[in-house]
Image (cartoon, rainbow, N blue to C red):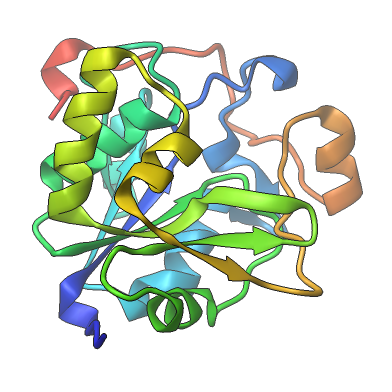
Length: 208
């Protein structure tokens, strides 16, 4: 099934609290002088028509870098809260999502997900196992499935993908990695953001 650039939006999931990192905002962790969220946008934005960030703080900072941030409409829903914010704004039929703490990138991931799916979307499996947030979602079915899942408080991403009938894409020899602890940061060569301060959330008026 052909999916063109104009059919695609990129959604970067950056709304987590990062409690094991002392509340550091993963989006602005630095490697080689570049913030993580800006690195992901740089690598993948040429492949999509629109970029969104699911984030619950520092919206003005995203805007200063030309990124549009969306807050969760309801707290404590985990990744499904971020997905709901993204599909609420998404104007394309397909949404490509990535967690903002992805360490190792594959610029061909999106094209591989497109090739793997048959209309219901696809998610990645790397050498560490299922990675459900590295995924290509059909937006209209996702909106409908999310409404049901959130009403039932069924917050597991993999259950949502099973309900949608999404395909699994096996990527042998690849580990996306993540940044959950200070040891993870050190091992991957990341540093804390020089502008980091206490965690704060934007006011409700900044929500989409």
